[in-house]
Amino acid sequence: MNFTKKASILFLFILSIFATGTVKAQFITDSVNGVRIDTSCHVVIDTISEVVMDTAQFEDIYLPEDAQFIPADVLYHSNWNNTDVKLRSEKLFEKNARYILPLVKCEEHHFVYPCDNGKVISPFGYRGRRIHTGTDIKLNLNDDVYASFDGVVRMAKRYSGYGNVVVIRHYNGLETLYGHLNKIKVKVNQKVKSGDVIGLGGRTGRATTTHLHFETRFLGDAFNSNKLVDYDKFKLLNDTIIITKNTFNLRKGNSNDDVEEVYIINKKGKKVKVKRRVKHKTKGKAKVKSKGKQTKSKSTSDKNSYEVKQGETLGEIAKRNHTTVKKLQSINKIGKKKMIRAGQKIKVD
Image (cartoon, rainbow, N blue to C red; front, side, top):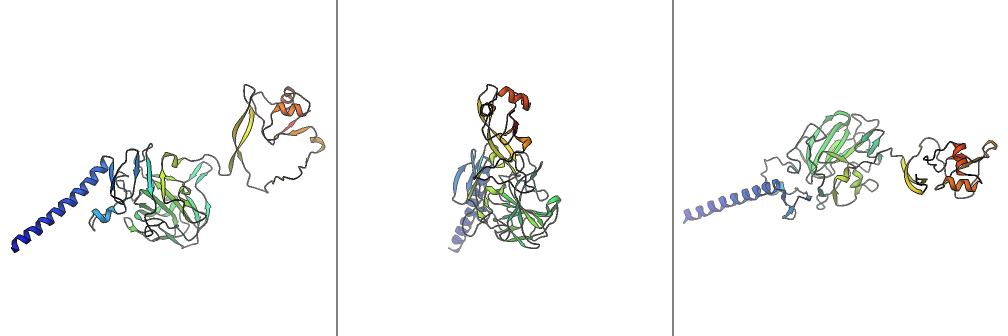
C-alpha cells in the first residue's frame, strides 16, 4: 500500500515537471513564430501587425529563482548589452509594426517621476545641428534619482558625455536612461521597482549645471519622452503608449522657430497660401503688437515706403498706392518669381 502511494506521488511529480516544461517550450516556440502568450491575461496574440508587450509576470510563473530574467528578450533578439547606451543590432524595430506598450499594470507597478518634482530646463530636440536625445530636469547635487518603472538594470557605468549613467530595460520593452549622476546606486542585472533609488543627482560628463538627463528609448532608438510624460504635472499622459515609426520623427530646425502661413503669387499669377518657417529672436526685448491705435513711425525719408501686410500681393499694393505692379517690381528690384512677405518694406514711388 505504501509502495502504491509513493509510486502515485512520484508519477504526479514527473507529470507536473513535464507539463511545466511543455508550457515553457510552447512560449519559446510561439515567440519565434510571431505569436506570444500575454502573461497578464493568458491569451494568444498575433504579433505580425501588432505587438503587445508585457512580460512582468513571466519570471514568476516559468523561471526558477536562480535563473537570470531579461525583459523583452525575444523582442530585442537576445541583445542584452551592458556596455553601450545604443543597441547596435540592425533592424530591431520593424518599421511597419505597431507596438502597444502598457505602462501601468496596477497600483503596485506604477510610474514614478525620476526626481522630486524637478522642472524641465532643456527639452528633447535639435540643438543647432546636434540632436539632444533626452529631457534635462533640474535637481540639486546628490538628490535621489528614481527608477520610473519596474525593470532590470542593463547598464550602470561612466559613459562618454552622459557621465555616470544608468539604463533600465522595462518589462514592456521600453528603456529609460538616467545621466550625469554623481553616484550610481545599482548594479548591472539588478532588478528594480519603480521608485527605487538608482543614483544621486550630479553633473558628471558633458553638463554645464547639476541636472538629470532623462531619456526614453525603444529597440535602440530614443524618442521624445513628452509622448508619455506630462512634465507639468509630473505624471504619465496615459497608461499605455503606442509606438510606430512616426514616434521617432524629429522636427528639423531650432526650437525657437515657428511656422506661419503667407500668400504668394505663383507662376500662373494666382494667389496661393504657403507655409514658411519664421525665426523668433530671443535676445533683447520682444516687440508687442498692440490691438489699439497703430502708430506709423515713418520718418521724412521714409514717406515713400510701404510695409507689406499679411496676405497682401503686389497687385493690391499697386492699386492702393495708385501705381503699377511693373513699376513696383522695377524700383524695388523684385523679380517675377520672387515673393513678398509680411513686414517687408517696399518703395511705392
